[in-house]
Length: 416
Image: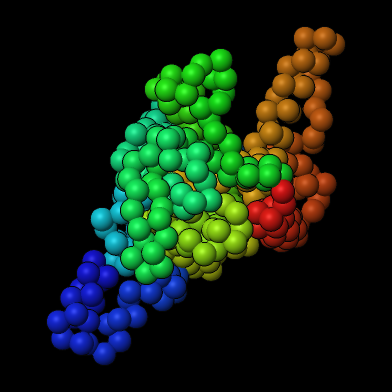
């Protein structure tokens, strides 16, 4: 909205400073500030409202140190984060961008599912919250939406110079034209591709999974594999963040690091020169997502003011389910989902720790008649708590690991 306002003021009235809003980097910095101020300044007022409305967390008795002190802490703080993401996005992004609207819908969709889960826990006094099958239905719905838009929407294209990729001229070309500023002859085409490290051309084509079919058949039916795979990625990462949000500040801090990295990847993917230098796909119009990523990061940093140890508010499933889905969908949109196993290593390990613990317990119960555990408790951060490691130390070390994984992820762009 502000983009269009200042564009009008710049073109018709030469308003001083209005031209700055044409720059993606300037709008991204403004987005960080607005999001941080919303979650930080208004967060305090919102927390007081949560207390008055009795939106308080019900803590399970797990025998963990400090859990008694957490009882009565307001939850549903994810509303703060999501509000701080959405407002700067709507104000500063170009709203004719399909990727921006897709991220807005995903944020609202998963935020609503998480809100229902928290509402049932708080007001219905049901510790289980929303039934798992309904959460999965909501997550699968997001996956289907993202997969369908990425596969079928006419505005979702990859752009390459024809001279450097002659094979693209006959492979699902949508439009061929000349770039206005440098005269390059480029081709827009649609294909379910993703960036993969270690491969020489750095690209993976989902159509090739149907290796026995011809090219036209692959393009016609590959969506039957592509959309389910995308759906599973979103559900897995979303649940991973949900499990990680078990101690003060852990999920919030790690999510900020992850989204900063994805924002950098979105910027280079939406910039032809940077994409060409890094030998990755140039994705027109994905640059606007940098503003969304900036707002996300600012919202998380501002929320940490209240969510760091000792937390005065929890994000609840309202925040954690949405954040996980946002991260996964963002990576898919910029075609970097194969980097998620590294970038989201903390979320994935937390998720796997639960799966392995449960599987091993069931296996040993069948074999020995008594269930055994690999970890003292899952998810993984609870294992360290059982080892009498303080929450703050666990969170700090997980943040350090997340930063290390983010650096490795960026380095992988040049590994061929």
